[in-house]
Image (cartoon, rainbow over all chains, first blue to last red; front, side):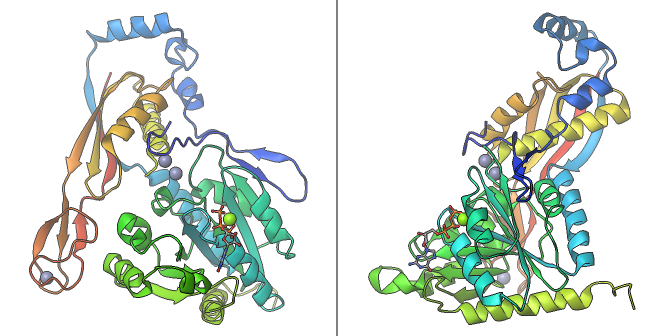
Length: 290
Length: 113
Ligand SMILES: Nc1nc2c(ncn2[C@@H]2O[C@H](COP(=O)(O)OP(=O)(O)OP(=O)(O)O)[C@@H](O)[C@H]2O)c(=O)[nH]1
Ligand SMILES: [Mg+2]
Ligand SMILES: [Zn+2]
Ligand SMILES: [Zn+2]
Ligand SMILES: [Zn+2]
């Protein structure tokens, strides 16, 4: 297991909201390819401890050679992210990856956003959580299509999960695909999903110095939503300081102060979304049927 | 950073190479890990051990080659070592340095038989 957060990547499931059947994502090619690679049964995954030991002993005398690899650990994820990005561009969909600590208000913001865009911009949602389909159900209650990914012990979404999940979602041209990542300010920064932008949500109950504590996430994001601003009168939270820290880490980050519950700043967020969606629509390949 | 899934990716890259280069046993794995990459080397070591079970890299020694963080200032052009990804330029203190080195997370090479 991951010693930092106890995460593992096995057992991610994707719930299709039409059929209730769980989709079990394949394990990431660790054991099976070994068997294919080594017809000699003694090196397959099912070998006994004894066989492994004798293989080790025999190898002492074996000839070693050096093999150059020179590949990034994220190479596979990045390749799947490139494929997702291409699919989103062809569909003319504006895809966003929403990242934050747990409980910053991602789902509430999404629900309010969908309500405000209703009838203007179609929105499809992918919800990532370790367990439960509560968040996808909150989205579906608005009438928007949503797919829940449960990562099990995994602490972030990866590009393959998102690729699989989009297969069951309607992606409308000129619409939005909102991907709510697992609440975690650490590893989602490293895993490209194929999104146009990462949007980091920081809520005012979390402390001003989050950008300095988790700089990778704030560097990876193009937009920061400072949420729960309705609570500012009750808190000791220095908004200017929080924004200065975010800009220290990422001088180009755009910041919008919002409150999902009071509606503060939501118009500016809607404008940003609508502009992105129409740019994706305009850039998409021309429709065939004319 | 998510060391277990990175370790699993490393094993997948190594197994791909095993098919390509026809080796079935890996003795040493060398990885370059940058100081600004957020990979905790000890966590990666631990994850690598568990991810390698049943693969051709089971029991292999993992050598982690650390790469120091280094950045360049867009304003004055100075190059300096970086401890965090948002270190300010030590000379003009205007903007954070632009990272030029130290975010690596790569499988460099292997000793195989
Ligand atoms: N006062 C206030 N509360 C908010 C606001 N936005 C969300 N909340 C509350 O914050 C809590 C968490 O909100 P969620 O929308 O579930 O947060 P989340 O980021 O989706 O949480 P996870 O998916 O569990 O990480 C709920 O009780 C919300 O009602 C806001 O703008 N103001
Ligand atoms: Mg949520
Ligand atoms: Zn993770
Ligand atoms: Zn982790
Ligand atoms: Zn400078």
